[in-house]
Image (cartoon, rainbow over all chains, first blue to last red):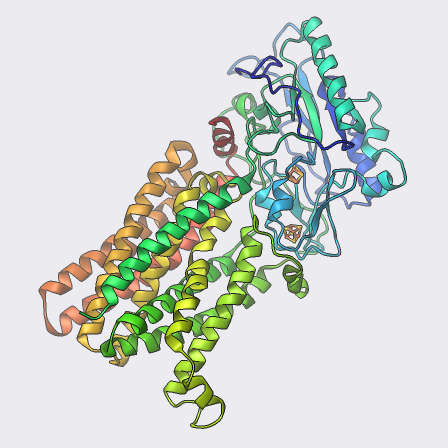
Length: 282
Length: 336
Ligand code: SF4
Ligand code: SF4
């Protein structure tokens, strides 16, 4: 858990977000786990239901983001020891539960967008990342190319789906359905620069109130690392990212393309030479 | 498939530790990233595409530098390349969620998307492969004597072969980059090794296929077969080194899918029966003469081909396993 505080390496709170970019600040210290965001998202975007069942490990029966689930509220029960007992002393904020409404991060440099071979995934005028449903042919390459496990192929229409940051609502000057529905303002919508300022102030406040674990996930120091240059939908967390199923220092997968092609070309030269020497007339 | 809803939490971790253990350093052991949907059609595509590209390269080099005794190799290589490239676009289209929209791939060319590059590379290569096969057919008199056949015979087949070898190598090797440029821990951790591994395996597969074909049809002389075997040996040695490098570079956590369960067995099968076994059989065959040696060499060739298919199966499905393992994802995203 080193260097995860706001004092880390000087990149805390910085983001490569383009001027005017719109995004989310999801402040998990305010989340009460009501799942209004999940419901509002399903309603506005007319997404079908998921499997109706129980996961059996927490109040989270949604499990994961998917083709028909674009907000997912994670529930983490804090247990103190190997026997799984609860701590007797309650921590400030969120009691024994961590709750976090996960969503597509609308990365400043997005793995899914770069991978898409049809150009279906675009960056909109709001600097959000959207899959154009009339273009996607369901090749599925964006699915493993997202470092956060967000998009998924639909079983019903064969295409990739994920949060659009309510592109249609933004066009009409409305805020996204989840942010509108959130009763505690855990989900806040606005220009990324303003949200980041607000997040920094909030983290400082939390530290002053004794929640020294609080930090921003989605700046250039944590979450938006490795060429991603920040997340337009970012978070305030109070436990290591892995606890929320988030990678601490993800990398933009396309960083590997050039070096991988170079090593492959070198191998092609070597093997071509071996073939020439073996096959030539002597 | 038309249920309209999905179960997404079936990929839970193996029973064992308590929920408290799991919740400490992962989210109840659930996958942190999504795995690709690629199944057998992609495995087969990797296999056939590899053979197609590499046999084109072998044919071109045999034609350019091999002299008259390598003509049968060049001929077989051109035909084999064309025959194996034909099904590849069909396999890719079959794999799409919306096959009728396959042509949307042709809207754009994206240099940072290996899949986009691969589509264009496959198209470029198919043109070369088809043209070279046509020229070969014309040279063999299969297309008659006049008109187009004469035109084809007049084409500079050696230069075409040389030019086509670029896209051919690309087709055999880009698949490694395709896997590397994802968030799948096992693939991206080995980003420098996968392309060379696909290439060397494609070369050994193509040479083995040509060896088997030419031996079975008694088309090539012993000199040609000897040279093919020498090349096969080099390719197999490269493959062996890369496979061992892949395992070592993956480390204990990310490399787990290569060790455990059926996939681990399959990986060891690739190493043993697909690479080391054929090398030993070939060495054994060099000590003997006559029919016995022939049989050993044929067996080696068939094992190489089976190993090549199995290798691609293991790489694809070990990737699924790796994507489902949050510990692997987090290990990758911690070490910077
Ligand atoms: S979180 Fe994943 S799906 Fe969302 S923009 Fe980033 S790479 Fe794309
Ligand atoms: S599944 Fe659709 S959105 Fe995803 S990479 Fe393929 S074409 Fe693009």
